[in-house]
Length: 108
Image 1 (cartoon, one colour):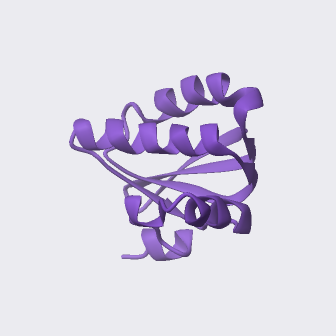
Image 2 (tube, rainbow, N blue to C red):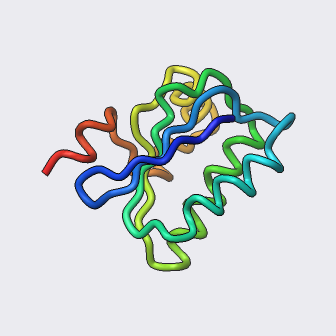
């Protein structure tokens, strides 16, 4: 997984790309949680995520749970077909308030 951080309209967008799978989930967890540490209102853009497995989904759930515990907002957006299929397959679409596009999230 590669991660790129962008600030738009006082909101933080973290663009995830590549694969979020068991092979690299430990490193991805460290990188993602560190990137989210100071994010009050954030979006994980998954539009360039071409592969995600059960451990990748667990990492997304962990990130969401940590944000909620600390009183922060974290959404998923720009879901790739792989991300949307994985979320649907596991019944997790409703767990996240997902947005269909990053542009919608950052619009005033």
